[in-house]
Structure formats: C-alpha cells, structure tokens
Amino acid sequence: LSGAALDIGGTKIAAVRFENGEVAERLTEPTNRAMSGTDLVRSCEQLLLRLDAEPEGPLGVAATGRVTNSGLWSAVNTGTLPNIENLPLAEMLSGALARPVHVLNDAAAAAWAEARWGAAAEAASMVYVTISTGVGGGFVFGGTLLRSENGLAGHVGFMSARESDQICGCGRFGTVESVASGLAIAERAKALGHPVTTKEVFEQWRAGTPWAEELVHDSARTIADLGASLRAGLGLDCMVLGGSVGLSGGYHDLVASYLASEPSMFRIKTAIAAFRHDSPLIGALLFAEERPK
Ligand code: ADP
Ligand code: BMX
Image (cartoon, rainbow, N blue to C red):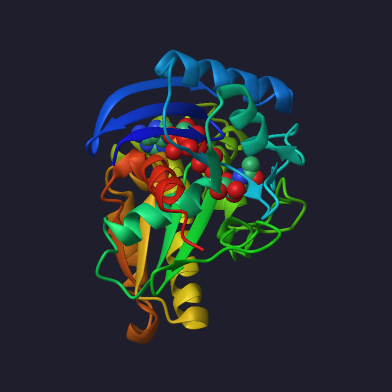
C-alpha cells in the first residue's frame, strides 16, 4: 500500500502518506467544528499539500458523515458538525489537488481495512464500530462493502439504545450515539458535575470512581447490546471495535463481558481493530486504489 489518505473526524483530521504499507509521514490537526464546510475542505487541502507537494496516484478519503453515491457529503449528527451539508467533497479536493479522489464514510473505510487485512480477515460477515466523537459503523458481507445511495448505510450510531433518554443531534430520540460516544460520555459527565474530558472519565473509571464507572459501563453495555442486535438481525460473525473510546484500555473487554451475558446465539465475536487508529486511512486508500463496485 503506497499513497496518501485523509481522515476527517469529528475531533481530528489526519493526513498520512503510506510507503510499502508503512506510515512514511503523518500530519494531524484538530477539527474546527464551527468552520464553514468550504473552509474545512480548504484546511484539508493545505494539510495534504504540506504532506505531498507533488502528489501522484489516487487519494483515499475517510470522512465522518454520510457520502451519497453522487459524492455529496453531509453530517448526520448536525449537533457535531453543523455546517456540513451537501458538500461535493471529492470534486472540491480533486479540483484543488489535481488528482483522483475517492471518499468513503470513515467507519465504512475502516470496515474495509479490517475485513480485507485486519481483525476480521477470516470472518464471512462483519461490522466495524467506531466509538469516537460519535458512533459510526460499516458492514462487509462476503467481501462486499455495504453502501446505499443516500450514504446512510452503516450508521449504527443512530439506531435505538435502551440506556438513552436524550434527543440526539441527528434529531432522533434515544440513539446509541447519544449514550455511547466520546462526546456523549463527556456531556453526561458534565451533567453529573464533572466537567472533564472523555479520556479523564476513563482514567476515573480505571481508578474505580463510581460516577465514571456508570458512564463507561453505559457506553460499553450499549455497544454490546448493539452487537447482539446486529447479530440477531443480520447473523454477523464479528464486530471489530475502533475509535479512541473503542481502543481505550479495558473498553473492549468490558463490551465482551456484557456480551457474555447474552444467550449464546447472539454472542457476536468481538475484536479490537488490528490497524488501531489507522483503519479508516488504510481502508480509504485501499478502496481508492482498487475501486471495487
Ligand atoms: P475522531 O472522532 O476525530 O475520528 P477519535 O477516534 O480520536 O477521533 O475520537 C475522539 C473522541 O475520543 C473524543 O471524544 C475524545 O475525547 C475521546 N478520546 C480520546 N482519547 C481517549 C482515550 N484515551 N480514552 C477515552 N476516550 C478518548
Ligand atoms: C457519527 C456520524 C457518522 C460517523 C460517526 C463516527 C456525523 C458527522 N458523523 O455517527 O457518519 O461515521 O459519527 O465519526 O454525522 P467520528 O468523527 O466519531 O470518527
């Protein structure tokens, strides 16, 4: 794998140049969620030009939000990214950088990397779930990445969760994202009188602090429940966890422990993303290079 990839997340943007499967260079910057869509794309262009002034070959892009078949990029949770609506992301980037650009949803891209080469390489069917700023998902069945015309396929973060009593930024009541995501964990901590980062909530959880334990357990139980529901609905073999919350030490084991209390039929096998934080980048570049139908 050689070439460039861009990952636009709700918290950070990463641009990486791969050479023979290794990371040759990485540039990151925080995502300015209040920026206009055009300015956000411009800042991505600047990052990519710093990475590679004379680029060759396709650029793979993994972006938070939905990407329609006609290439329009929109936030689903407009509470997270209020200014991203119907932006022709691939067209804008390919025009500015003079190279072919292929855009996928970030979790769909990560699913592709993990299903092809990573933790689910042996599985006939899989879901990748990122627990990050939001909660996203991507499905690969028998070597095919699930996609839909409206770009919504895979958005498991907007399915229902029994632990949530909140209106989600997507407009739905009681979603997985509104209880399990990094942003939700920090917001819930603040509401309990603890205005700390999600990482600090996790540190408090590891130190045995009861309020933090409740929040981390609610998140992990929700993801376990989601995995069991997806297995019931789709018969999936494997759920791969990624994102900074999903990869946080001890989180995967907690999800697995909640799944252990499900009837065996619904106990989906779980794994930690083999490519860790780089799954979306690797999947986006691989997909851009191969362009499977
Ligand atoms: P993005 O959503 O931009 O793809 P990440 O996967 O890094 O980025 O997820 C960002 C979320 O993860 C934020 O809510 C952040 O507070 C949280 N986070 C970052 N590091 C940790 C950590 N070590 N443990 C738990 N949560 C973390
Ligand atoms: C949200 C949604 C998904 C995305 C997921 C993870 C938006 C802006 N994003 O559910 O498209 O896959 O978050 O994204 O509506 P991340 O930024 O948390 O990595």
